[in-house]
Amino acid sequence: MIEKTETQTQEDRLSSRRLRLQTLVRLRWLAVTGQAVTVAIVAFLLKFPLPLVASCSLIAALAGVNFYLMIRYPATHRLEPRAAFALLGFDLLQLCALLFITGGLANPFAALVCVPVIISFASQPIRYSTALIGFAMVCITVLAFSPFPLPWFDGMEINVHNVMQFGVWCSIASTMAFAAFYAYRVSMEASQLADALAATELVLQREKHLSQLDGLAAAAAHELGTPLATISVVAKEMERELKNDDRFREDVQLLRSQSERCRDILRRLTTLSAEGEAHLRRLPLSSMMEEIVAPHREFDIKLELVEKSPRRGEPVTDRNAGIMYGLGNLIENAVDYAREKVTVTIEHDHEKVLIVIEDDGNGYAPDILTRIGEPYVTKRQREDTAGGLGLGLFIAKTLLERSGASLIFENREPESAGARIRIEWPRILIDANSTK
Image (cartoon, rainbow, N blue to C red; front, side, top):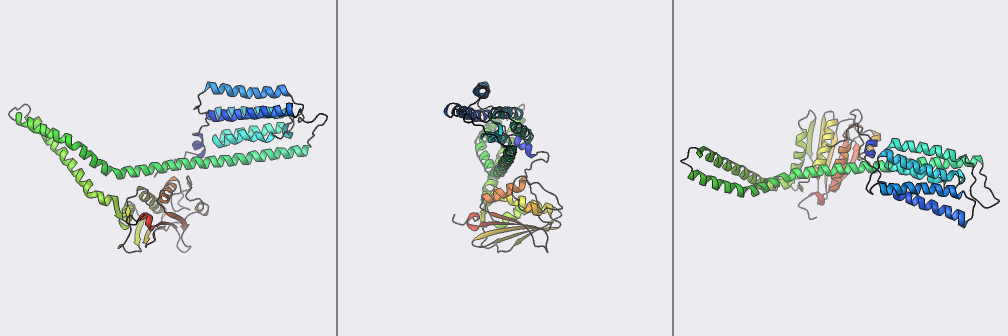
């Protein structure tokens, strides 16, 4: 089972995803364009009084830094968390300086202060993002005390009451906090899901690789047969020519005997592959379950396999690495958290195939039951859980669902404590003899 170590935190997984510089550069060019267009409209179209030189200087500073980054680093450059924090902090400071000289919180564009913070929470480690949102809170607090008026019509001045200023501050602060938390949660869950799916693919690839070793052995036997036959023929000729030469007779005999030994080994590999190919590719449902259950009978927990339906007419399944790994993982978890007994029940009819795994442990904790199947749910305490609830369970659930199964995780009835997992397939999906 593939599991994350206990010391690997959510922050570690997020820190491995670095912000690409090209993405930030493009966003900054968009900001430069937006700021320049806004200043031009306010100053020349609406003809509002505006500190034009200072505003243009701040916009030029952002454009200059952005141009330097564009020519200094390649487009594929990935930013370290500290570098990303510094650039986003600079963006935040430049925007707040522009807002400060154009009315502070009275400026309708003050809400844009949230943008660098949201970008940080969506792509950077939590400690850097927390520092940035703290800096942003300081900046919007300073904006509330801006002495510069909002650019407006000549002879008119907009005076925002202190209560209104506080309301705007609360609005921006709450929007920033909510949007940042939302971006962080979405990004973290996407990162976890991507890592878990990558681990799932790795497990499935490993299982498929193991199931293909038999075919590889047959191919190797076939390919090596011809050169070994040539060696054997040459060895016989050498033995005949040198049989009276005591210097080489023993060496030639050894060469011939070892070549014959290699041919015998390859012959056995070919025979095993030919004999075992059919039953390795397909097997009855009961045989598959016996094979899955067998490795877990070596423990102190009693493992009972119950067949409610007769074996006559039972489904014959293709050897599916994902199904076998997924069921094996669920049974292993049940054995780990059972007190004395685990029961695996098999039932099938013309429409469905049902496998129920039950243990007599304490069952799933209520807060965990609603989250089962999510990656990195790692509460694995024997006092309150009945099975593995980390990455392994996510992998098992994903592999089984890919085969067409539906899974239900639940606790057993109060009179019989423990956990129950119901895995059900439409028979047409799992029976190799059915017309698909």
